[in-house]
Image (cartoon, rainbow over all chains, first blue to last red; front, side, top):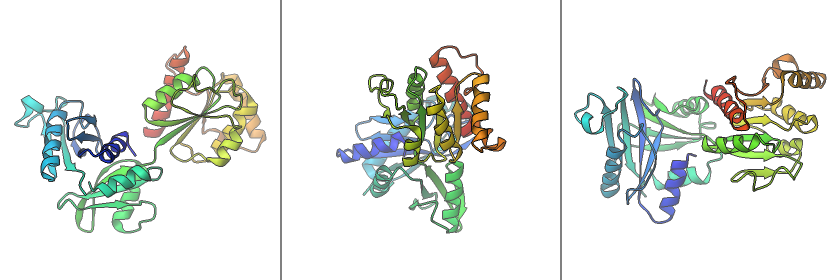
Length: 104
Length: 221
């Protein structure tokens, strides 16, 4: 049991809403391996990481959207991405992140 | 993730779980990888043993297998100076740390914040809590009465790392004693002694760093 999920469980118990971002696939040189997770709370607090800090902001934003609408999202990031200037990976790799709300 | 899945993981995290997520329709299943013999369960078992989360094919579907293994544990025998930085660094690396020393003057809360201290003799401790394949065991006491029974418990277990501090000569004498107790060369080769990667460590913290590095190398290498 990771610290991220332990904390997510504690947040839920305290009445917060929570979403998780999980690296489910990597291509080439990626900063965090598959299975790495970030836990995000409805007020923007977070613990953990899915990259070296390059794309966390975008993942947290998507996590807040998932908390709001209950839908899961698959996000992909890489240097060649259209969003590269904003949230690309400097390392040249590519990652897919699954963002999902913790739901009843 | 279903709230019930998260709560099960949080409540029962002392055992291995694999969360399987259907990459297509988002279906999720929580799998006990060591009792489930379905194709998906067997794929989950391989992932849990390798400790690698990855995609896998089963039932004609693509699943993401998210591995939740029990926490890593470090058992430090001997609440000596080096044990202090080693315990602190291992906590940062997400180990649950136990310090075992029957000499209660050494093993005090003030010297080891956030660490579970045990004043049992190592053979008693390990009889109650046998090391698992997620356990690293490091003996630092410099006292054969304390160190040797811990090493024996480690050699009888699947512990992924067994390290022993001491000079080359101390270590050679230690191996002779254990050989006289019936341990063959193959088993004794599991003991890393003197423990730690050769990085020229001098201070207790540097030696602790070299030991934690060697534990990591053994676990992941």
